[in-house]
Length: 377
Ligand SMILES: [Zn+2]
Image (tube, rainbow, N blue to C red; front, side, top):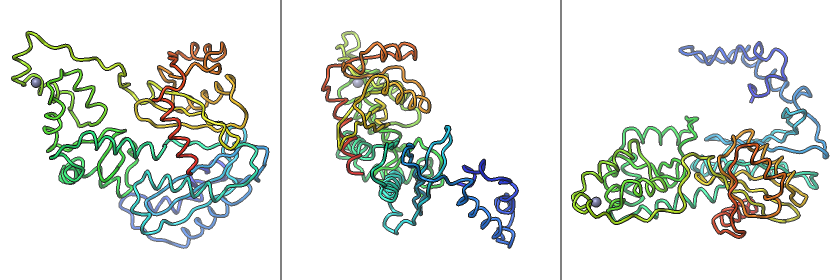
């Protein structure tokens, strides 16, 4: 946190020097008077008017949350001239039970804690942003396990083999200890996930291949199915070899039955295809929901006025400034999304706009579940 706000603290690097010295490799950790003084000085600086800004009901608010293995914290800020200026800090330790939460659940707890702590009504404009729709992630991971489960392949066997797997057990342990910045992996039900795909330990990979090829589908179809549910290093090559070595497939090769092509291709990268939709009004607010088709991660913006194209473009520009531009954007054909302003924005940003009939369950289901999650928060 000190690093984050160091640009507001004069001589920050000089003040922190005794503390940074403690972190030098192979040096002994000795808390001296100089360290204590530096610590007090930093505390004073962080709570001084150089860093803190008074609450202004006219300015938009941002709540930033974070969770560590032992504590959760939130910062209430205004954005002044593009710079986040904190209004207040809040944090608390986790209870022993909460320490057993997954990182995802701790992050969610931090959001609940911060929103409850800082909630000031009436607020001119509310603005929450979160990368994660917690229920959504849970649901997808559990449905993945459900889909790939067989009599031999259960949650229990995956957990056991993950813990025995040399590479995966290390990744899992680092996640459990909160020692990693690797955001590629998450833990659900003690199983490693990459996005919504379960990471399959080495010992169980042949079982998965067997399951995937049960109906003798071709390489393309197998890869497609695998991409929805599971992953391991070299999975594509293993699928190719499994099909090439299948006696049955070799025999019927002269008269292959055409495999049905899936109409809903899985995007290859997280932000390739996004789905956008508005929900609301809910308690006089409208929710712009932007969901990655692949990872199902959601970005949500809350506005007070009924949505129009111009505002939507503004919100999307803000999201894309950090997430990057998608290749395709799926929405229903509401006036907001088919106006000249909106179409022009898509054209100029190089986004392929795909319109679908209103009430499409894929988009609406996701959007509504996200709104449910937000309401619970
Ligand atoms: Zn076969």
